[in-house]
Image 1 (spheres, each protein chain N blue to C red):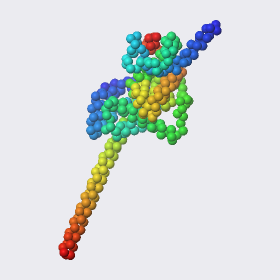
Image 2 (tube, chains in turn orange, yellow):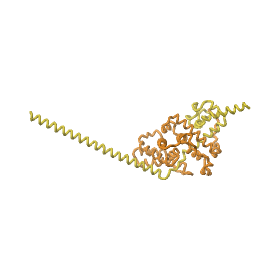
Image 3 (cartoon, rainbow over the protein chains, first blue to last red):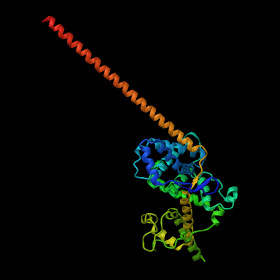
Image 4 (cartoon, rainbow over the protein chains, first blue to last red):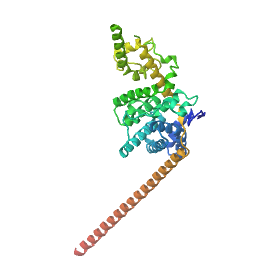
Length: 220
Length: 151
């Protein structure tokens, strides 16, 4: 396991990168009933799972609950894990499903605006003391804009654009059709773009990679 | 002037129309000169992604290309977010481990109960079978004795 701690504001980069081979052997041992292996498996995957839960729910308490629920469900169905996908991908799907269940349960018990046109928090860097700090990069601005996206849009963009889950898997875990997942993704990207357009710092930082600029379209 | 205004109006309408497709097109790899795509050849643009005239418009329109570049930049940063881990609150990992421990103990206890239940049911079954057999034997011997006396 590689360990490298990065900077800033509750986030670290490449914090604990678990080796897939190590994870596979831990999964095998845990499936065989080895408790120590199960605990170690949780330790090496926890930060990634918690991060996904946090990105999906947007707050610490819910992220904690979702991550715990995901591990309990994974534990109960570990014997059914076939190993044809990576363990972390399987775990992320369970996490996404747990987060969706939490939000669904909450929306039944509390009146909450989950509509796509819900009021949006001001994400402009100049209106955020932390955002004014020198050195805040575009990635941090995007993370902040992501956190204020409506839940239904945020979940697809997190699962697809950050965690690279296939549309089909996203649709299954969120209980929607694949076509609906694609439509939501389209709307989510547009909304995120709109949010960032209002962020003067992001908009003025311009295109940083020449590869971003399209030169050719389908060899027209 | 009216001709120029018409051109501007049409171009703006085309941009608005193309803008509907840019979020998805930006998520695909762009084709290279060889006709394949950068990286994975399975994720290139296809005719299903947008009508042909949208591709033609985007190829000519600097404004749409800039918009596409903005989307690409956002997507690149989103992918990079995968490498950022959010620090979990203190005690969160320990709570998960404790919950798993509790679940394992519960499973063990329910497993033990299951064994006890099976043993109890098995015992009752064996006892019932033994009592039935004994009853049948007693009945048969009494019947035999009764037949002998009448005979």
